[in-house]
Image (cartoon, rainbow, N blue to C red; front, side, top):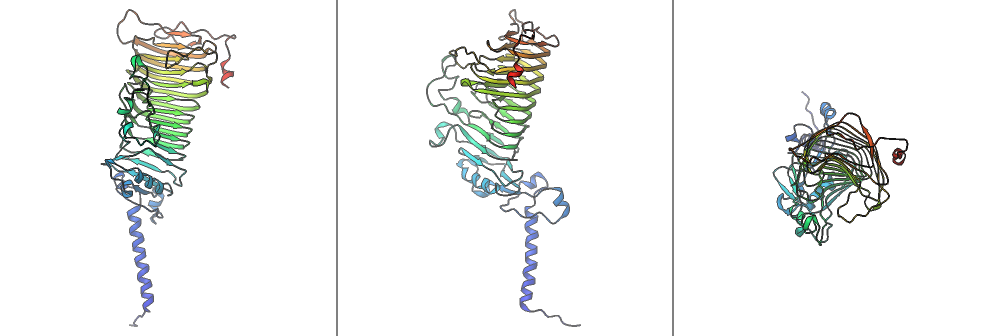
Length: 462
């Protein structure tokens, strides 16, 4: 048999080639993302590698790089400031095509007020919270040179998903007890002193967002806030704060459109969901709300501002043991329009003001009468049933003196008092025009019939 010979330098090249191939396959097997959830989030990767050569895996699931905040210096003992580690992990994840920023289970991370800024190169960035994140404990622990109006801000982000089975603990107790808060003064008055309190999680000028599965509690102020956003889906959240915690709205949206809020449980000291100016195409479904101040549109028109809200649907929800049910609230002197709003299939349980339009909204007793108002037109109430607290009317339509509410529609509204009483208040109407399509309980005789002489609010809302 002929003896094969090979120059020494070619032998070295061959060995290097074999070693490189083995190393590449090993790295691919360690960093491929897309099997069981436990496997996914036990992986640590700091680099983005090409997809596996396996055709089936490449087609079935995308490849992700996972950025565990522990690998960037986070301690997770609930005391150490882990802000910088989160920022470093974010900056790396933001530059990768497909990335997961992982907040692992079993740790508590304390973060200072932080802005997570985009735009990112990532397609479908996942901010995965499986552990606990929290701010400094109260205003005395907040750095003096940092704004006290916000905690975690996501700015100019497109296509991000915030999800996980973890907890966001807002540590709001010391903020609620500031002397300026409404419940601290005599008869609900406020007292002098600093009053800024941070929104827990705020999305600003962002699009195509998903927030899913998280638990968040005890926000110093709003728990979630979306400003100037487009394409928001919120699903399966649990939001909790005490019923006496001030200004702790669960979810607030402002100048935001194409919003879906589904399948969530919210109890707090203010609105479960509040819809501010500039919002349209909002769908709210299957919310369990209360104790709280209900689900609200407004307040709108403060300081003579213009506010427009349209195409809002609230359906298949429960509001329980709350001061308000479904509410539209506007300040005198404002302008703009609320139109095309539908409330349907909502169960009330011991709610003090189940259905209310309040165009005289005022936080003090010193608000003077104004001639201008936000127009309210085309509001539908369908299949609203349950019980109400007899201290207030079951329905109240307090519309502006100068511009009436028009095209109010009621059908299958049945609200019964929670306890027997000799003085059950009748529904209240003021300058309200509309139609009772099917007799309500109690009867609503105070709505005025639409006539040709009635102001055409449709034109004002156009």
